[in-house]
Length: 102
Image (cartoon, rainbow, N blue to C red):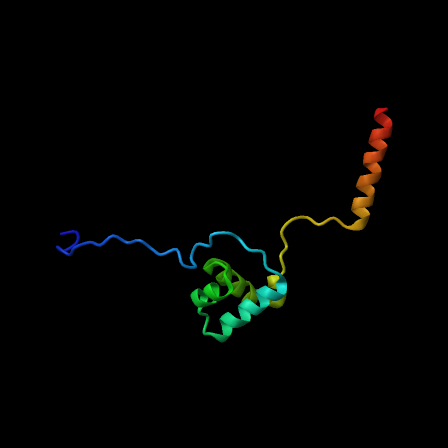
């Protein structure tokens, strides 16, 4: 038989820390503090996530990045940040386009 006549129970996982309701932005220093707390507590991701109000998966990923890249792994590298020279050049080109359109 499929279930050996054992009554199956419905499983309703609690939301707890596995699925964060809303994302919260953290600084590099906060991420460092969270990772250090997790490592000092035997990698208890669930407890760490609950204590710092972040998701379980985020804590897990930060610890993994910290293990492979050290403190530099906790830097947020998303997006393209333009240097001052790029911004100045872009502004100059926009003005030139406006001048030529007239």
